[in-house]
Image (cartoon, rainbow, N blue to C red; front, side):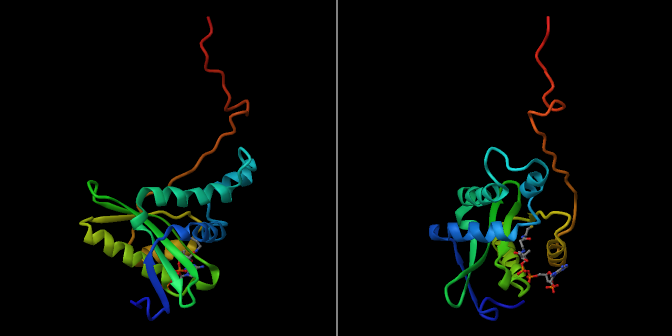
Length: 177
Ligand SMILES: CC(C)(COP(=O)(O)OP(=O)(O)OC[C@H]1O[C@@H](n2cnc3c(N)ncnc32)[C@H](O)[C@@H]1OP(=O)(O)O)[C@@H](O)C(=O)NCCC(=O)NCCS
């Protein structure tokens, strides 16, 4: 397993200054593998917000949930090139990895594997027994990477959206006399 030094990067804790760059990395990286983007392709923007705005808010949620569970990767020249977010359900025994992404030039160098392994080590140190990560069916890198680390597929989920102004979904449920 290569170390951060081997890969010429530093892995460090999250600082509030990282927020905007991490959001930028996220919306760039999740194009094609975002549920909100898929909904937008069907329904267009919702309430004046595009999928990038929605996806970026996932990072706000990750920060609010467990800021110490975020690791950031910096290149030798100090550029933030990727990150992983995590949180721990200690009572339930499961560590969660909601988001993970790199800028394009830094993908495929083993950094995703490294960050996941570091997250799993933190989960073990916290006494957790299992870890969970999700990916869309079309994310081939995700499938390959996660299963090669030891994650096993246990379920597939289907995401539905409805337009509430649509006559089919806007069925009148009020009681009539
Ligand atoms: C997914 C992501 C975080 C992985 O990070 P990474 O640093 O690129 O990953 P690594 O280099 O550690 O490993 C990638 C693995 O996928 C393999 N891979 C690359 N392209 C692939 C493809 N098209 N199909 C299958 N496997 C592929 C690589 O060979 C490597 O496997 P190996 O170590 O067995 O050779 C990164 O690619 C990324 O930011 N992607 C866009 C955002 C995203 O999809 N995030 C995850 C959402 S669940």
